[in-house]
Image 1 (cartoon, rainbow, N blue to C red):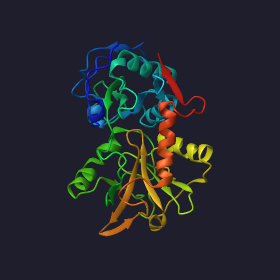
Image 2 (spheres, rainbow, N blue to C red):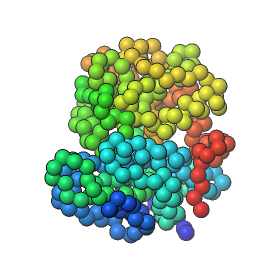
Image 3 (tube, helix red, strand yellow):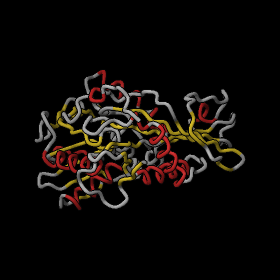
Amino acid sequence: MAKQNIDWSNLGFGYMKTPQRFVSNYKDGKWDEGGLTADDQVVISECAGVLQYAQTVFEGLKAYTTADGRTVMFRPDLNASRLRNSAERLEMPVYPEDKFIEAVKAVVAANADFVPPYGSGATLYLRPYMFGTNPVIGVKPADEYQFRVFCTPVGPYFKGGAKPITIRVTDFDRAAPHGTGHIKAGLNYAMSLHAIVTAHEEGYDENMYLDAATRTKVEETGGANFLFVTKDGKVVTPKSSSILPSITRRSLMYVAEHYLGLEVEEREVFFDEVKDFAECGLCGTAAVISPVGKIVNKGEEICFPSGMEEMGPVTKKLYETLLGIQMGTIEAPEGWIVEVK
């Protein structure tokens, strides 16, 4: 196929309809075979479980064109297992992990001419998701579900790309200690919308959420995990049962230790110690790494030594190494890169 005539280098992070998506339905205790369709409309009951009680989970992953022209995905097996964990937590049927891989591969292959070319800075974003479809008026899990995967070409999540951003410590809580913060459920993101809108209104790019129990420990933002670098070069990431286990964060920690020879640590990070770090970044599928230059807490500013002009040296090396692995210019650990033919 010939690539679409799109201004790839100027794409934002938004939705663009592509020709094909995958749909599978769960009924009478089992999933059907599912398949590709050109129909992008979802038709469900007005009383569907997802509409009444927010019974929906989702994933996000990307397909890329590598330096040698291959189309690949990055660690989709981890997305499949995380969707399984999310579904189990919300009493939804698990979509088989092998079928998940087949579905995302099929969607990429069917929309191959929307996979951005190598070097454009753009990627093909894939959104697998599942939701309750049958009428549910009493508070209980749905009996029928739909699993779907669509894709859309996207540019960087933050318009400034690698330019450091400014975030604030929000007064809102993201997730309760024994709640659903560790899964990728739509309800977690719904509650963050007011916080991000007000942050933008006040001139901030994102929110830093603290733990709901004590409000003394760093958790994450509305859509990404934190990554810190100490003054002696150790890479530290917050540990909490209410943080979403980011695939990008886990990959970066592996890269830091095994590719760059850095010391890594996943532990509780108290907000009081944030001022002592040399670098800070947000990591996730959408942004990969976005450097943080400044954190504001009720008017008090924490300015990182790495500054507001560019990524800090360790963050930059992490970013470049992971991107090199994804784009095929650096050899990947076994199983990380899945080719789509």
